[in-house]
Length: 111
Ligand code: HEC
Image 1 (cartoon, rainbow, N blue to C red):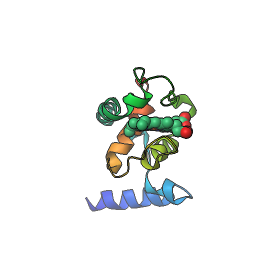
Image 2 (tube, rainbow, N blue to C red; image 1 turned 135 degrees about the horizontal axis):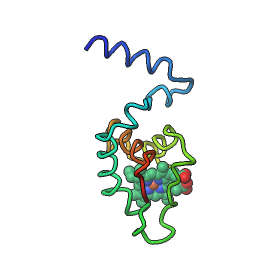
Image 3 (cartoon, helix red, strand yellow; image 1 turned 180 degrees about the horizontal axis):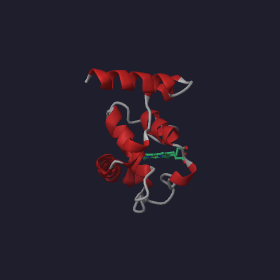
Image 4 (cartoon, rainbow, N blue to C red; image 1 turned 45 degrees about the horizontal axis):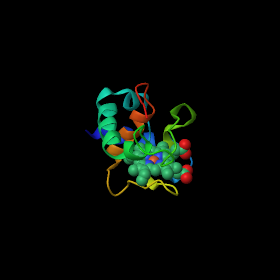
């Protein structure tokens, strides 16, 4: 338990320059964990597909192109929103927003 706290603290300390980057880290272990991807997929289908999905009426939101994104960009958009994209910070906790990011960046993502 103590060790976990120390590791988490040093991981965020070394993770980078800006405040928002220091706030979250995306380890390969987290991003590849099927459990996190499944959580993200469920949330995406429930909340995001109505704008980003194939069945959303055309022009509602851009098709997501994960191959062009970095995880922290996706996380930032989800957290803070941007223009027509709502922010989800109050609706979803950090783990849920990170899981959404893991799903979008995963091989199985479709929109
Ligand atoms: C009300 C419709 C709507 C919903 C719901 C919505 N989005 Fe968006 N989203 C948008 C729009 C519109 C944009 C484009 C914003 C811009 O760049 O002007 C966007 C942009 C994004 C981007 C950045 C895409 C890029 O290439 O710049 C990501 C990532 C994203 N949304 C993820 C999500 C996730 C994850 C959810 C669910 C938690 C979600 N969105 C829910 C409308 C929506």
